[in-house]
Amino acid sequence: MRVIGFRYQRSLAAPAEIRGVGFISGARVQARFLPAPVDSGVVFRRTDLPGSPAIPARATQVTGTQRRTTIGPPPAAITLIEHLMAAIAGLRVDNCTVELDGPEPPGLDGSAAGFVDVLAGAGVVLQPARRPIYGVTAPVVVTAGGATIALHPPEGPDLRLSYLLDYGLAAPISRQNYTVDLRPETFVREVAFCRTFLTQPEADGLRAQGIGMHVTPAEVLVFGPHGPIGNRVRCADEPARHKVLDLIGDLALCSFDLAGHVVAYRSGHALNIELARRLTALVESSSRQVFLHSGRSAVTRAA
Image (tube, rainbow, N blue to C red; front, top):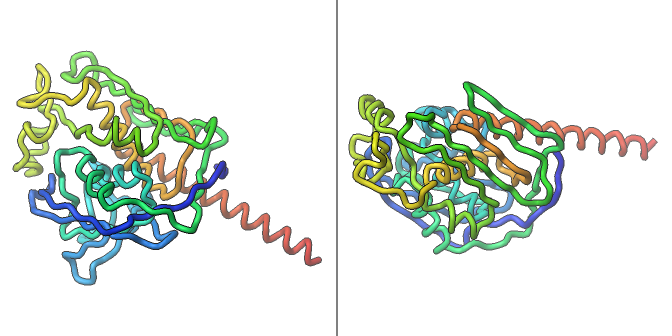
């Protein structure tokens, strides 16, 4: 990994909040977004627990990737953070404290649009510190169970994301792909409104576990044999676009900017987070090498 550029860090201009029902718990929950100083990153606080424990939004803090991304250990864990994190990353908000009075953010409509609305309403300000943009010098590839995700070297300072969704020939969701060049305006216009989705067997399996009992197909896209049940897609490739939304939220846990081209085939949260962990480790390793080299140079000059 190498630094290919910098940009100034950004935080919120004012606090913001949003309320709703959590998809997993079914409980009413409030999320408050607060401005934060430079280099603090995104930090979650569980205000419903004694001491309001804090959990940094980093790949090293991930404790679960089964159908959603969870950070922190029980009982302070926070689950299904990817849509909220996608909104924060998509708008390039680098430093922010997120206060939650429950174990998950509001589910809203299963997209990032509601979070985008309140964050955009609060406004974003530049801060007097720089944030590095990293690129790989060779592809970093993660594969598992027929799924693949890779980050390819950059041609400039921007990040492109491509997702190929393929549930198989007999699946109720058609094979589709989507690519976006990630900038705040393209994220808001093309990705933020795309909702989470399930097949009917997946939804039935979650309900059997007592998860999402309060959510109806009118609120979340559930695909049956003949398409969405009691609902309709907002665009023909909404599922593939939502997978890109998840990717943005999961890779935001790197806590630094990426440049290059992320290409994912059938990737889910587990593979997304594994890529984020590998990239984080590569950056930490390269930073140590720079530090050691600088130290040796200083010793040589002193001698």
